Image (cartoon, rainbow, N blue to C red; front, side):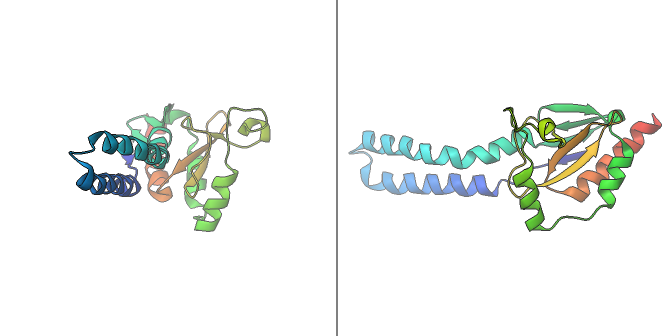
Length: 175
């Protein structure tokens, strides 16, 4: 029904720069100094890996998929029958935040497993997916379950996600 794909532009740029830099270094050093070239390649990997950590984290913890009767966000699975359709409609009819509002909201949306940083300790909605925070600049949507639990879901396309979720919860309510 719905699959939110993560953009791969940042990862492609980082990997391309790494490969271009290693190739440039290899032109003069290979075959005479292959050990030096391998050492520099490994050293530059130390710079590359942190640059790829955020896209990998987003792919693991903020991946959204709605199929059939299940909403999957990161490592969590929620039956669509447990999602409150009224909260989805309210979020769909709400205003879309500006980029500045998205950055401010994502900076405040922390749900880390430490005393005082849990969303429940601060009275905020629980972050779904397994991550500790909403990535900076990503939009987030607050919905609730039929039991009254507030859930915060980080999304790249708010309108498409909420439209698909509204359709899924309407279908789950009829079943």
